[in-house]
Amino acid sequence: MDVKKLALLVGALVIAVVTAVMAKNMFAGAGAQQAAAAPVPLGPKVLVAKKALPVGTIIDADSFTFQPWPKELMQSAYYVEGQPDGDPKKLLGTVVRYAITAGQPATRGSLVGPQDRGFLAAALGPGMRAITVPVNVSSGVAGFVFPGDHVDMVLTQNVEGGGDGPTLKVSETIIRNLRVLATDQRITDKDDEGKTQVKTFSNVTLEVTPRIAEKIAVAQSLGSLSLALRSIADNSAEVERAVASGAIKVPAGTTPDQEKQMLTAMANRPIDSNTTFSTGGDVSRFQRRTVPAKASSAPAPGAASALPVGPVIRVARGNSVTVVPVGAR
Image 1 (cartoon, rainbow, N blue to C red):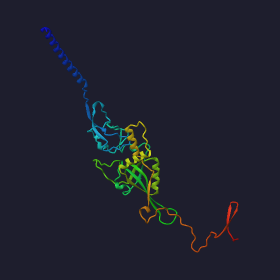
Image 2: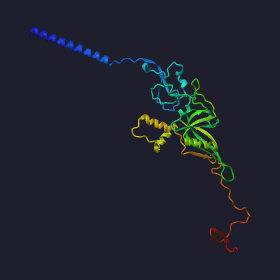
Image 3: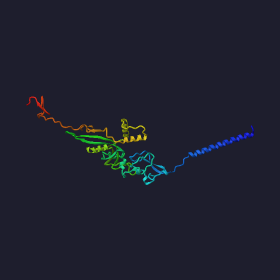
Image 4: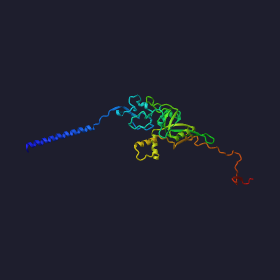
């Protein structure tokens, strides 16, 4: 082969290799520049919801957390870390007025405090009412009932009956799964330092339906009312029973969040059916199990019987019937 042709061929190969390497580096650099996103300038930390907070939720320590927020998205209504009104402890016990999704910043208009107008109305669920009942140390579980807990209501009364003897003593669970809204106008169990504070109280405000509010008003005139604190696990058990009985029907196409909201609403719903009761006879063998009956009208010993003895003839004159003993005049 000619030396000149060979040199030209080698030179062409070298140029092709160099061109390919340069093109690869150029395209790789351009791709890296396109993939790199411009850094978003972050502003101060704002208070955001750690979980979905529907309307009526009472704020606790696990509701919010601070998170950096972009500067261009900052608003004056946000709670900012370091500001006097941005302390999460000061928001404990407030109620969600407008629904807040998980990760969304809380605004001053979305929360309402105990001293604000419409606080109790915001704490109520749709279609629910608030009613206050008086309690004492024993009927109020010695102060260990806190806002947000669920209780059963027990009515204790004496049933007179129509006869002689002692009255019937009876205790009945008339309503189950009542949500406690406040105790003596306290809507949280925490003090200024965030510690749980146990206090006795004389009034309890409960969330009820309109029908149950009527029942409680009547029950207060019948006897004494007591509260029985429910376990947290009982709420899930009530939901399982409702699902099994068909009381809860989840429509097709429901999202997991909507399904969870439906189940939560059902778990918080008070129940006034399938109530239980106990009488004095269930507690002590010396007490009654039934209402005193009327005394019998049997004639005294030795007294003449007012009823005829022996065969009788019934004589009907129009609507009047006369009973005449046989042989009598």
